[in-house]
Image 1 (spheres, helix red, strand yellow):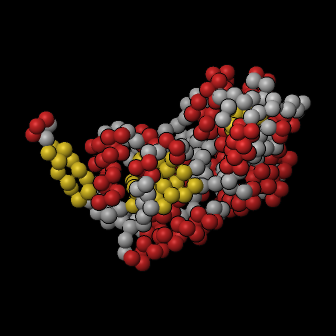
Image 2 (image 1 turned 180 degrees about the vertical axis):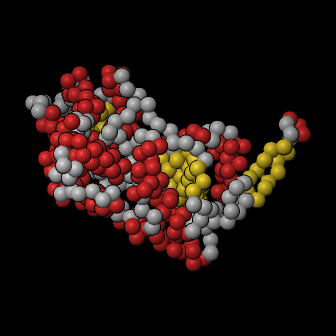
Image 3 (image 1 turned 180 degrees about the horizontal axis):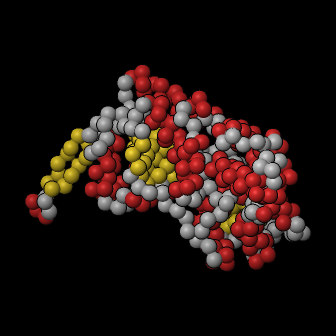
Length: 365
């Protein structure tokens, strides 16, 4: 049971390998493939076990699930997990996002609809205005809404109780979430990029649901090029399906899959032209780095948030870029991937070298 509060925000520039949602049609397609229970969820084994225990314990106590914060790159399943949790507890799910809640009254209107044990999912929770965030605090802690009546010297606050509920917040930018907000979540979990084997299992299950004739090798190829992201894997599956219907017999074979991905400009590592431009900018314009993300964004004509949220995480994950105190740097792997002769960076200070090692380790966690 889902009550939609706000429409999906579509990115102005769409990329087939972006983890961002690309409109209602894609959302409907993915919804039909979405797991409904923990038992159907593939991948993220440690996180699923943690959430399953939390849900079962809450049900045994007859209480709502603890407020839960899910963070990680887009397209990894934060919204899907909110649906699964609501289904597991048999609760109504209300869906909204941070930018849609511009005033405290917007939040109060949603909270007033909640019943005992319902789940409120706020995507992009880091984008909540401060006035709305402050209104959310008493709702999370004490299950009440504080409403200010009148103005000036006659102003007074009235508290309205609301039924105990579960808030699930999702963010791609954990660092932008305020400390008071982070501290109010009982469960705080990072969603990792998926391993190719998990993506292969997801694609296999979805191909069966779609009644597609596929070769295992074709799905392996897709899983390797999906950037560890289920949303991208499903999107590529759709594109290859269409390509096979027009250019082939309808069967998803390895040659058909490779031809379709080549047409889309997606290479063996799942990079598209924008990713490669990011790497070339660091290597060719800034001699391999280090260079600040602001300079890269200005050179590419891109928004900084697009580079930080959409492009950079996967490049860090697979070791093509590192971050140091001085900025971003292309690794030897990046040079090799682009077919450019490797030029070792200038000798850095010991402190910067230590920071580089720290960032490289963090990007692979």
